[in-house]
Image (cartoon, rainbow, N blue to C red):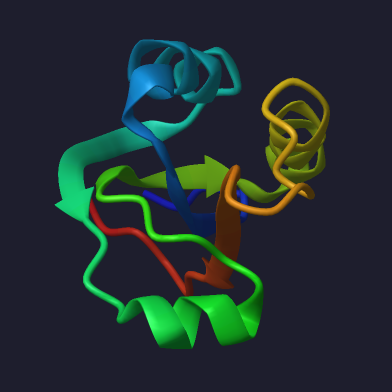
Length: 102
């Protein structure tokens, strides 16, 4: 079976307090197999300061498959609702996925 949709892997690292909202938003944008785990920042304070970040221990790590055409809408929500362009608010990125077999 072949599918015409193109997919990417999306990674989001954000504050834990946004977990349920972010997971719902991903599923609302047709994300598949979203994995969620809590993470702890381990970078040294001096390194973070040189990058303009502050130490925050409680993180949320989300990883899932997203249709390529949904990526701009998801990034827009992250930027406007969660202020991802502001320091220490979170960050997200995608990387290409050649194919999914299921």
